Amino acid sequence: MNGKIKSLFENQLVEFENSASELKTEAYKDSLTNLPNRTRFVEEFEQEIGQPDKHNQFGVLLLLRATELQHINQSKGYQSGDKYVKGISDILVSVVGTYSNAKLYRLNGSDFGMILPNITAKEADTMAQNIHSRLNEYMRISELSAVGSMGIVTYGHGKPLGELLASADTAISLAQTKHVNAWHVHKDNNLGQTSATTFGNQNWRAVIDDVISNGNVTLLFQPIKAANRGTKAYSEVLSRFKSDDAQVLPTASFLAMAEKLNRVVEIDQLIVEKVLELIKTKSITDQFFGINVTPASVHNDQFMIWLERKLLKEASIATKLVFEVSEFGLQQNINSSRRFINMIHRAGARVTVEKFGVGITSFKFFQELKPDFIKLDGSYTRNIEDEKNNQYFIRMIVDLSHRIGVNVLAECVETQEEKHVLEKLFVDGCQGYYLGNTWTVIGHSALLLLLNNSKALTKSHPKHKPVVF
Image 1: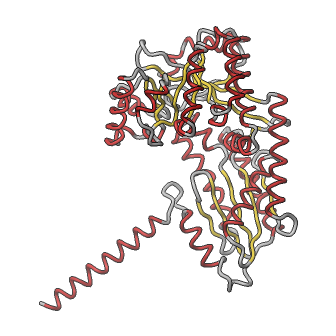
Image 2 (image 1 turned 60 degrees about the vertical axis):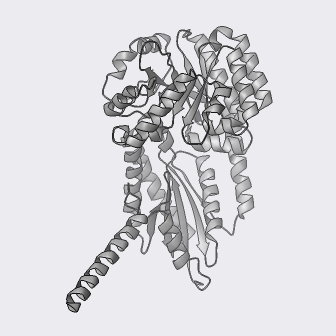
Image 3 (image 1 turned 30 degrees about the vertical axis):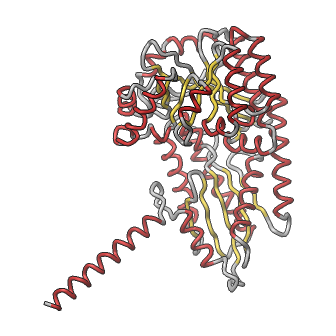
């Protein structure tokens, strides 16, 4: 009997160890690409490179940032975003396999990391050219305006990982000011981290100045489909920026650098000017448009004065505008947020609180601010038909919002099932790739034709080509 108990115990111990091993493996793996994740990256770097006794270790760390992920998720849906990330992963896997002991990781949503031991900066430059060619081909096949930018930094023994990542991140910033899918090799013997950062900032400052002075902004529009005729909906304005040589700049990086360099308020002013100009020149005052405003502008007194004068001067257009501000941005300064929303309402425009549900804002806060719309964060929409907890949360938000006169919108709607469930939860409007792709405006008649046939557009297949005029 004791032998059976011992055998049973040993078998259970083996099963437990196997289960623990499997759980550990899953914890270290990215579910989309099956690559090791950031946790594994940090652990292996510290074990194999970062130890003080690794005196002979040298090599290269490469970061690749998937610069178009946010744009693709927003305009084509998360399934297309996943496909885009997987495509980049496949390219990097094929390249890393040609280098001895090289390892590839997915560090976060948009960043890949590659450790290449025992290769020089010159060899890394050749490798980057190879990746660049493959990214260009992938861009052509996938009909993208860009794929990603690379930052490369050499490492030696005792170099802290944090400093390496900061240097590689700066190298990406430099690469993004060059050309599409570019790379930049940061060499320790040429530039210190401080000077490299300064140089990167100077490049970005020149690019941002050029965008502002030449008005190099393209406006795209994505419709919000009202759930019923009694609800007013609008089309969200999405901005894309170009360099002086007509290269499309990665939107997220551009706005992040504009904010870092204290130029984001001027960018917001430029976008508002462009929208007002387009509405007037194309005579589309029968439509409603949503303009994103950064928290920096919302809390900037000079911007608020400037915007109020603009809206009062264009009173008939102001009533057709909806200004979108993130929930987090409004939370940063309650008093200035309240002043901003009150000003917008005085001018006849409206306000949407976007990315709602990520923070912990109370409804008392929204009763005081009195926004016109709440736009649920896309994380609540994805696969909503299978997420009972999210369904309960959304139904509660809808009930509370309607009691205080606020309409609820849902973004990132990508399937008929998601739309159907959201409508059953009494959401007032839906936005996403399933309901309508983004489009640009060039011709007046073409735009009106599209807007007048928006019902036909929303019934079309979710994978239709973008409408461009």
